Length: 134
Image 1 (tube, one colour):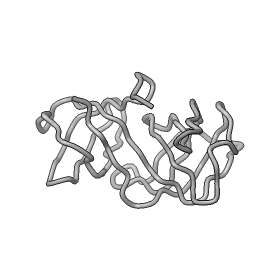
Image 2: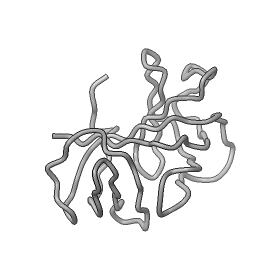
Image 3: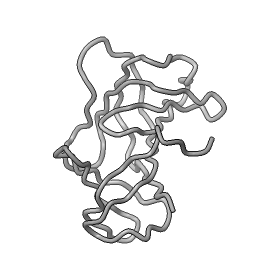
């Protein structure tokens, strides 16, 4: 599935060291530490666009609360947001959290277990990636 406007994260590149990057999310205090999956022509302090992918440890449907990523500074660990699209072919969910991100359910779970509009929460495995757009 190709990237669409709904799965593109817009951020400011705060730091880059090899394949490790820190993205500041505009209009928030979030600074996400991610693994850069590709080359970027962006410079520190400049805007960058790309797609975030994360693998969930067990996903659950949530009945209350809003969208968030914990911690605010660092690697995503606890994530909650709303499912906006489902890609059954690749067994993944597009979730609108603080930013849009593709979430691969835990082994043994299926994207088919969830519906668009569901609020979900999960612990994220280490190694969430950011694939810059050219």
